[in-house]
Length: 337
Image (tube, rainbow, N blue to C red; front, side):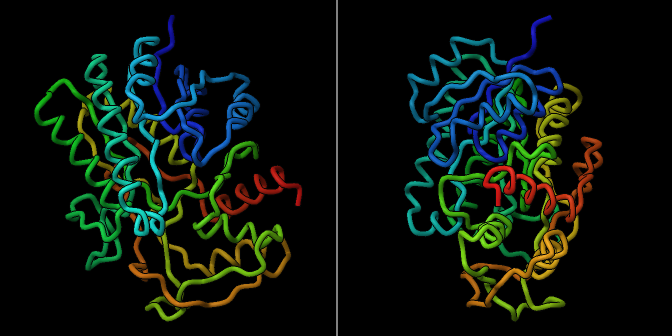
């Protein structure tokens, strides 16, 4: 029996590579395309170490229509998982056109290639940033999106494009998955967050402090209306996210063909709680200093994941300690500190 082929854009990236592992484990044939702008080609070897199988890999950009056409002509693609995109909130504010070109035009290019090839099933890697600032801290899918940065705006534009396509083309099956704060690494320690660009997320930056790459951890704001004054976020293990993609793909094969779902753990943790967890795991003190809040940062928000629980039968199984210990194990294996 031939395995169903799933095209994974951005499959050498953080969440994409973990999802490729899960696709292999569940019997799919993943094809990775990635321009390696923020990831490394050796991720293919790491996927092989994790699964004993090496996925097909093609280096290229989704904005390259000739490249995409060749890929779609070479395989009988069953579905697309679309992770390719730039993801820095800060960078998107400094260089918005780069984000509209890469995230929006790149997605349009991909969708056109799907149209031309008769492929009509897609899972889009969206983000909780589409919600923006709300009057509540618990975000469910009924809230009206109101992104406050360019990155979030590009994600919402692509969601809207896919929703419009679904309204006009009944045979399409689409899913928009809104992640909260992906973190952690695979339990074997081969895959983790290992970007070419300087980390901006809390846990990768904290690990750089532990490894000596950075002298001190900057905490943006200590005057929020939270128990310890620092911001609180919903941290969700990357393996739970990858499993959510498989369940979503299965759901699109059954009674659902248009889904927008939160993927989050359903509670928040403060910056200080994250630091304390790593200090307990390592027995080391993590130096930090408070600096001014970043523009647009919120005191607290977290997911209501009940829709994903109900529709997919999905629930986040890994907790904060798992997230921190797995991220640490990957960092130790990658850099031997």
